[in-house]
Amino acid sequence: MSTVDSLVPPGVRVRLSDDVVRCDDGQTLFGTRSGRILRLAPVAVRILQDGDFTVSDRTGAVLSRALFDRGMADPLWPARPAETDPARALHDVTVVVPVRDRTSALQALLEALPPVGDVVVVDDGSRDPEAVRAACERARARVVRHQVSHGPAAARNTGISCCTTDFVAVIDSDVIPEEHALARLRRHFDDPLVGVAGPRIMGAQVCGTGWIARYEAASSSLDLGPVAGPVAPLTRLSYLPSATLMLRVAALGSGFDPDLHVAEDVDLVWRMVASGWRARYAPEARVHHDHRTTTGAWVARKSFYGTGAALLAQRHGALVAPMRLHPLSAAVVAFAATQRRRTVTAAAALAGVQLLLTAQRVRTQHRHHPVRLGATLTAMSLTAAAMQTGAALTRHHWPVALLLATRSRRARRMLVLAALTCGARGHRESELDPVRYLLARRADDLAYGFGLWRGALAARSPRCLLPSFTSLCATRTAPPSPVGDAPLTPTREGTRHG
Image (cartoon, rainbow, N blue to C red):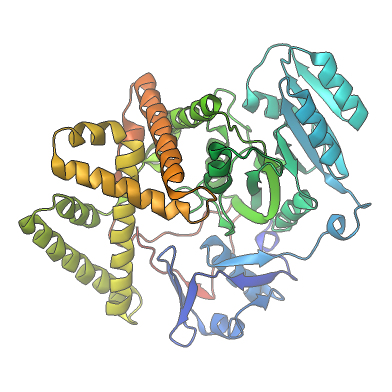
């Protein structure tokens, strides 16, 4: 693939993300969620003078790539034929469904699928293979059987190996896609650098009314929310769940790691991004997942998710760190947490030092509004540090926090404050009353943290428990291209606060 082939194709509408603010008469873009600053060349300012724009030439294609890679804009792709004419199938997409025993759910999924190039069901050691085969025959789907279960990653790889199409959608058997969901994922692959795209994964349309079901409807680990964006480690969107993924077969490499029975989706996406492929979260495509809503199964699943961090740490190191802080921000939060007059004063002084250093860095790189941007970036850094500390106390490191709380009144106050703050932040989108939501959130965090520590002990490594530290204003470049990006002539890379 040539450099020209790697450009965003013409006809794509480019929309600035809702969190992007234009400053200096459009010469500077500032991401209020990411803290990223992008200084634009005059030609890029002209293209963006009306806000959104449609890619029509090379300059627009290069600018759109810069904005997409930095999470500052989203593509609005033209509708594909499968969206406007259901009779025109997604002929270049194979659907792969790994399944073990869930025949009724499998049948419901197969009936809900739109016309596609092929459907391959991988029976991963079901106790009643004939029932699986019968469901596949009714839906005219191919079935491949593992005599014994090898796990979901191996089952997906088996199905992918049967593909003859350019794209594959891996869908768990307990998922039902909405109409046009697959077509809306497929259109992202009109960008030649997109290797994987994932939909918004919501609860089943007919779900339980219990408190766990209502909690999952608002706070499921699989639901990444309504805001689209690029997916990469250490960003707002750091993973895509494999309950439903669409993948470019040429980008898959060795595929899912069959040795991983948890977090195999995170591992695959991170490897693809490291190879230069882009990953996109596309919430306009929606599927519905049958969440676990009985207490025992729900707690076990949350704990199981936690065990995956140690396995990821063995493969990806500090990318798995539960906290990512600048040392000054960490020191400010630590001093403030002691709740003593002298150390709180020291925290305020350190915050001032951080503001001065950040403003100086902004002045060096951008020259415009160093104090205002420095203050904003410092506030974002300190807020993020406080939020990460709260999450660590209540989720990742709760055994340590609980031990400290038994010995210190100040530690107890910090733990209660963190628990209430995290609960209040998530409750806004829940149908549960505040008390039950808070209890569910704490149970979620306790189960995940238990699994996290259990995984670390099993791996005999604390790496997944350790924080990582960043520079004051970490400059983050765009992901490398597997084919060689065009130079980003309309833009100059800015500052992303770490």
